[in-house]
Amino acid sequence: MELNTLRPALGSTKDRKRIGRGIGSGHGKTATKGHKGQKARSGGSVKPGFEGGQMPLQRRLPKRGFRPLTRTEYVLINLSQLDVFEAGACVDRDAMDAKGLLKKSCLPVKVLANGEIGKALTIKADKFSKAAIDKIKAAGGSVEELCAC
Image (cartoon, rainbow, N blue to C red; front, side):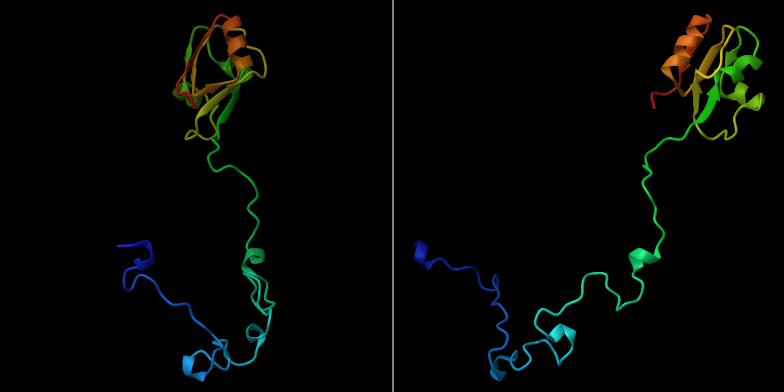
């Protein structure tokens, strides 16, 4: 075996279509372009998505904008809202729901630092702002984060 005798395996390669090479080739006369029309002309084609002047699909559909699909939505609770609890109470999702603080009880809870807290509370929530943690600990309370979301 020598390099000049190597050939591809039978059936593994295909001859290219030689168009416009006479009637006997089967691709003569119109060179597989059919008769007349825009697509038969030199340089004639339509851009992808062109629908003949009709309003194209990408313009008929509403714009979706940019909103990350992985974004987590929280029920936001301010420290000022937690004043309804007695000092030393354990404030968790059920306690907040019982007091009517949760608008959507299916979403995770995030505690924000708006307002002041004058009582020592044990607060259990899914997430806390850094300022909220500082204020709760300054009031003598404790923080328990339920998940590291």
